[in-house]
Image 1 (cartoon, helix red, strand yellow):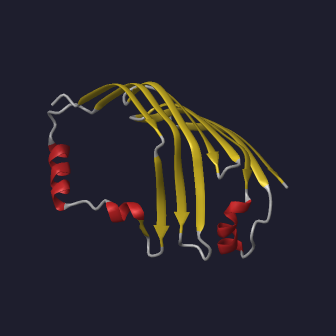
Image 2 (cartoon, helix red, strand yellow):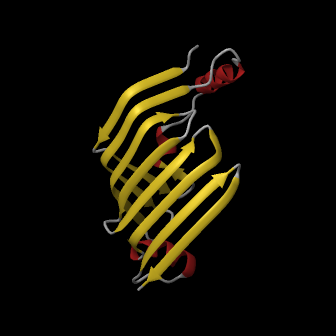
Image 3 (cartoon, rainbow, N blue to C red):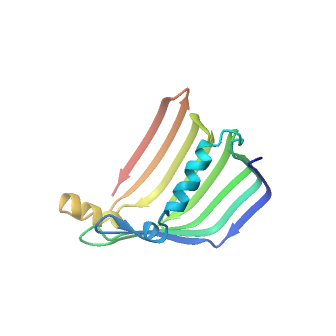
Length: 182
């Protein structure tokens, strides 16, 4: 078996999804996807097949734009609903077996701006370069968690974070700058 997938381009626009978690450790994804006994048998057969080559996936151009994601948590006394919008992902020459240069940006709950740049190999996580920047994130929407953990709401405040994390031979060198104001 060749196990090779090569795509010229994957372009997605307007993707919308959500993750919803409920009490009793259930969520919308595990309710949707339940592994069958047949799937387990296939996975075991694939794991014992030593003749097949490792999966090789290559995508020349990968773009995701104008997308959104909601995280909804019903396990708290007051439900938490968080919107991530204007999600953009850009990758050129994606390959499972070599370093990839991925850029992601998004708008967090209509105020905070997120930017992530990742350089790394999915099949070899011992060497990575991850840069994360969050600007002007409003803290008030996190009141549901603050109430549940500390008994007090967050009434105002913003946070900005700059994080640079370089992993070389499984050794982490990280630099983080956090500003909390108002």
